[in-house]
Length: 192
Ligand SMILES: [Zn+2]
Ligand SMILES: [Zn+2]
Image 1 (cartoon, protein in one colour):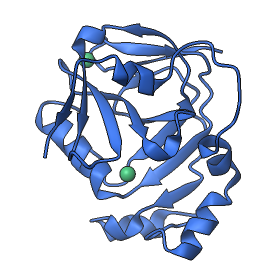
Image 2 (cartoon, protein in one colour):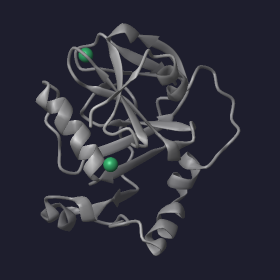
Image 3 (cartoon, helix red, strand yellow):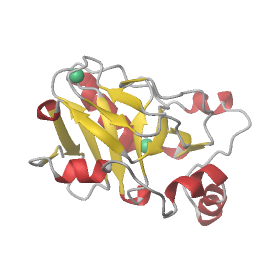
């Protein structure tokens, strides 16, 4: 079933073809933290120290309020491109090289959505970057990935939801991908 992902103020968002997320991860990385802190400083939602990332198929049926959307990278070498709303500083979509245009990601609680959010996180990643290490003891029954060492990378890739989401799969698409939406935007801001 289709679903919507919109910013908190509602001026912009996407309708996606499949509102059932394919993956959820908890992420302690510095980039997620910096991106959410930057948005929060401009008036967006408070960042959590271990945000939940929700992945959906990158199949966008319609785009609303594109004139309010901006794309940014933290650094010119950054591998993630994030789309935020210029009015409310929600982050409504994130593309990363490793997603291979199969999926895109959004942060739970940093946008509004009627996607089915009952999915449980499959792993917690980048725990070495976490500032509040007390969070780790609260994590139960999921793989804990601290630094993506060789062993951890293998363990991560063997998670079925991860390989299903990130590996190239030929599937019919009904709309456009987040990458193509980003390409159609006038520019990508580099925050530095
Ligand atoms: Zn907004
Ligand atoms: Zn992250």
